[in-house]
Length: 572
Ligand code: DGT
Ligand code: CA
Ligand code: CA
Ligand code: ZN
Image (cartoon, rainbow, N blue to C red; front, top):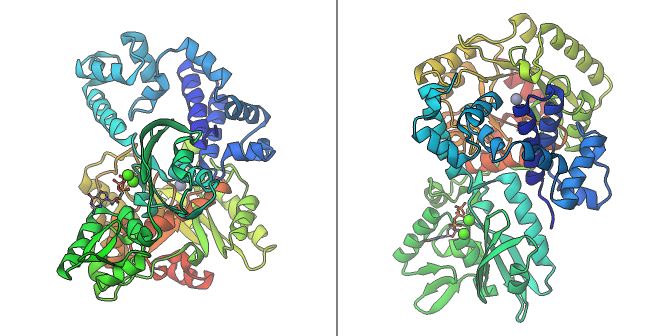
């Protein structure tokens, strides 16, 4: 049974959580956290790497000891150290730590004073108004805990993209072992590249007598078989995640793919168009009376209602059908269009790879440029740098650039937007940089008017280029801060500033809807990975998926430009 990266990361994080509650050494805690993030950010399965005999200690931030721990998890599904820690601290204390507003100190108080060690216990204590009586907690925290608990309960059911990708990849590989498969793919929200996936909808067309259903329900990661039929089966994986498999005949494959890709709203609109033409459209095909007039390919289905093929990412009934009727569908941006990454960190702050390694990784991806954007001084927990350290890095980049051909490292910073709207570093150093990425990293709870004003004031600084992860949300974890995004876009447009689509799968911020708004307003977007290691530069593809859902074309995205064109755009 392959152990997923997400499971490994979770265990390492749990160790860090429990060590933190114990008050262990900060370096030790940090090492486990970094390793967890490193593993979660990998685009390759660690189980697979071990199977291939790769040395985990080669990974940035992973020493021999941690490599051993990770191998232990992969080989036994368990971690001795974690079991030891849990013996001392029963229940789910690390689960409590993941509740917004609860850190190790507060969890410790809650555990010691109320004996609460589970989410259920926490909910009860909050409802019984017991939390507010604890030292340093209060009524406000109690309410925050209840809101956060609700979010955790709702959010847990949907997978973020890396886990969905890994789940789909392994399962499809398993199904492909069967002989006689004609076509096989994952449809649903997964194919539409939605930011979270509720369940997987797999579709297959097979030759007669192919025993794909047996093979499906016997998958090694199956937890429960919900139903098993000849054309449709559903299972729950060990994680509780649901997968449906449908087998259709060749002549229906396109119609079924169209139907199960959805979205439901898009399908309903298409079906209505069919009705107006006297056609019945369902997962088996397009029918006039009893005759099937289309069904083999998706394009055939769209053609019967007079439409060109519509890309899956657009199928949300958000205007794509009208655009298709007018032959005005966007030519969506692709990964191949991207010529560089404009937001990455290195070892100098909280990244895991060196400047040189990051530059090489960017070249390997066929990029022309890469902007190094470390955190600024205010972000002490991430080792943010001051003016002096930045000046040193600028020199280092100049030196490295003089050795590179056909590739340029851009000098940048991810500078904090302070509460009053000023930037965390002085202009006399910002002016030395090619790219200034600006972020809100604290004071998320300002009222909307204040937060909006803060950001607009920051954009008044003529060195402000890109507004990073504009809403501040973390998917399934933290809501966006209140802000008037349209107003910000308007002001960005006036000043020649850009908005980031942060491609990290925990963020995907801008959202698809705001990408479309930005495009409509003529504000250009930078798709950036915020990579903290060479591997996470692969997050670009998640950003591309989101950009496509937001109707963005290559022209709407600044890092599809050549270096020369980009530099022009960055001159405000
Ligand atoms: P999810 O799983 O919540 O992330 O979202 P989807 O879009 O994958 O939804 P799911 O798994 O419930 O259904 C897969 C597709 O099947 C959906 O996108 C469209 C199609 N579908 C499901 N129910 C209906 C329905 O009642 N009418 C129509 N026209 N299509 C449906
Ligand atoms: Ca689904
Ligand atoms: Ca489904
Ligand atoms: Zn960042």
